[in-house]
Length: 307
Ligand SMILES: NC(=O)c1ccc[n+]([C@@H]2O[C@H](COP(=O)([O-])OP(=O)(O)OC[C@H]3O[C@@H](n4cnc5c(N)ncnc54)[C@H](O)[C@@H]3O)[C@@H](O)[C@H]2O)c1
Image (tube, rainbow, N blue to C red; front, side):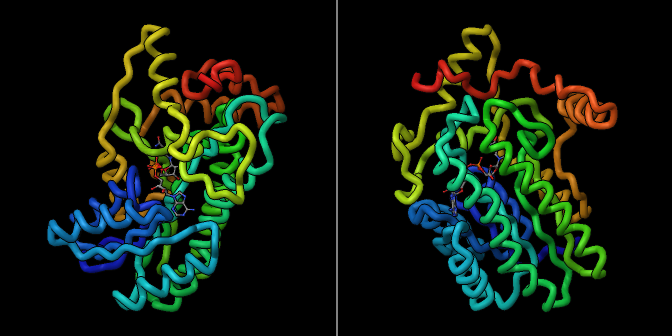
């Protein structure tokens, strides 16, 4: 999709964080943007602020775990703008389960798989047939993570598993779109930046807005667990400085990836590249996955979980 001006983008999880940054970038490129999020006030604030700046945006409260809801999102986008050229399946959650995989509650698995995996599947099922039928250039961007999408952090098994699935789903989608000679392509977004730093988004409040049907004993409160605070303390204790990078940089690499039709949209990262090499070597040599045991500061150990 080289020419995006006047085209229509749909962004799930567009109410805050990376989805909001994508929305802002697509608007700045002259696109019409449909902002979809499960939290109504986030849909309102994002669309309100973008409209006030003169951009053409529409908000649709959407639950990506429900195919019906995502189909209603597609129908609302078609009714408002007549076509959809770009779908960013970006909505994602962290359930708050870190630590021992054998202790994770099945509802953490269900919620995470429903949002992070079925949300992407629902986005593909609802939008791709329409985009193919339009017979115009189009693009699907699925948001994965280096955690699972490249190599897993072992203390966040649930999240990493969902992102590994997103990577495989998107590889298959890309291949099938190429096989049928579609004008629609697909990419994987690994949220990352060229400047060093973490991304300060709602994902650092795992467990936030957990629907009642995924309730479990000891779940984080409705506003989520303060994982960022725990991480900052851990880093301070280790004498390590924490920097944050602007979310607009994630949107920059994503936008460049769309117009250049880059499949693996990620900022270069030597440490990550080494882990990918170590993993491939382990698979080819059939040696144990020792690269998994490298220390990481990102995820909590079981002893820190309730702090
Ligand atoms: N922030 C990071 O460092 C990072 C790193 C790698 C990957 N990611 C991924 O980036 C994506 C965006 O996350 P973020 O970091 O901006 O977090 P975020 O919490 O700020 O944004 C996620 C958005 O998704 C929405 N959402 C949650 N469940 C939904 C549902 N069922 N239906 C519709 N919307 C729903 C939330 O309300 C929220 O607005 C996620 O897929 C996340 O896994 C983030």
